[in-house]
Length: 339
Image (tube, rainbow, N blue to C red; front, side, top):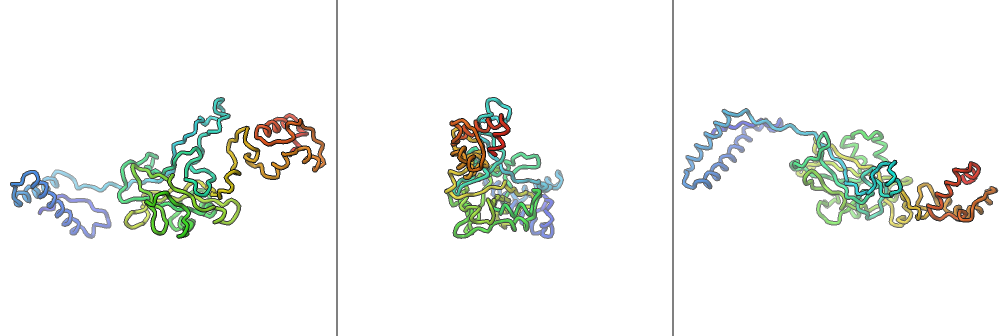
């Protein structure tokens, strides 16, 4: 059969051009015979071979060789559709007291063990494959899947202080190797979980969900230091070889902490309600909470003469604390003593 249709081959296939062309022509010939036989069962094999060869010859004469499409540079990003009801404008009179604020990051700063990986607003997280201008690629990338790892956030910060791109070896050096008995991440279904506990995501319409993943281990229990952090690494790999896909840049999440469930009631509020206990305020520790239970007695122990209205001697709620702060703003002496 006349080869006719000539393809521009990838560099790695050029040494095997005769074998590739012979294989392609055999497949075309087989398809032509079956297709023509379905259209007209009375055609002979010789007639079909003649028509197929003549068509291939005419195509080669009329067209330039088919060029392979150049690889497009893609990257992975983390995204979510924020469910907050506030507008995000700090000067908005309607939203300034609304505790539901637009998320400034994708992952929460703190999760509890077995929490699903969701944004602070409760929205599901996803990984998207985007092009150079940030548009989600709805067309599938052949033979690609995503692999998820947990990074040592402190080590990553040392290796990559400026959030520059790292090579594979540097990234692998930051990966926390999972315990086969208890992986760092789990998912409710067993789909996409390898025998070595690694988690794989299937990309559909340019995106893959992360919200079915759960944290299983406290970052403080696993890593040394005070409030050490994790990060998520998601990179694209070839489904067959497991090698990184060269034209798809990985994504690393913001840092986050995973705590045990016993600290659930001690988690601070970003925007507390006036009815919340003062322990929900950031930078208010146990010692301060104890002193605020009897401010006059705390002042006596510090040899301070302090005058306060009776209703503010014991401060339990955020609303009372706010009144106390407003009072200190009007009196420099009181502010100095309460410090």
